[in-house]
Length: 136
Image (cartoon, rainbow, N blue to C red; front, side, top):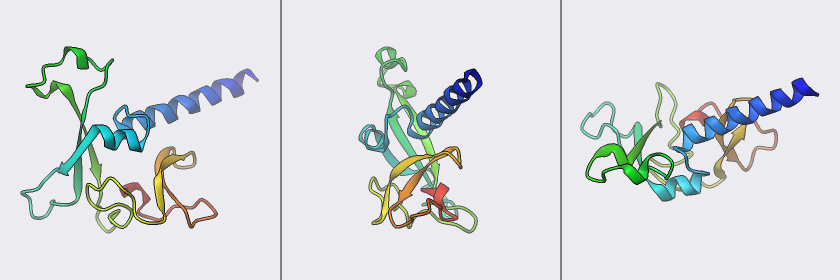
């Protein structure tokens, strides 16, 4: 029982870390999009434009937000999201910088087999993920 409990605690900590990393300390996708705004990371580069989102979020209390100077960049956290890869695109799951997912795609949930958060696909009964799921 001791080893199982330790393993469960470790798994929970991994999920929490991944969630906080993915959602920049927000509690879920809805709170993330409520605290953050999105823009193109490389708008002036023809080859890279519309491929990588840059989300900018306000720091929360506990992240030294009460001590930050709003005229400087230390009051925000940035989260970069790759949306288009070499031969794959996640833009069918969610348009570039959009806050809403496409029809049939729900907000991200923890997928233990991938050890990551992934959008939930409503029409997939076996829980499998498409090849481009990580580009959500």
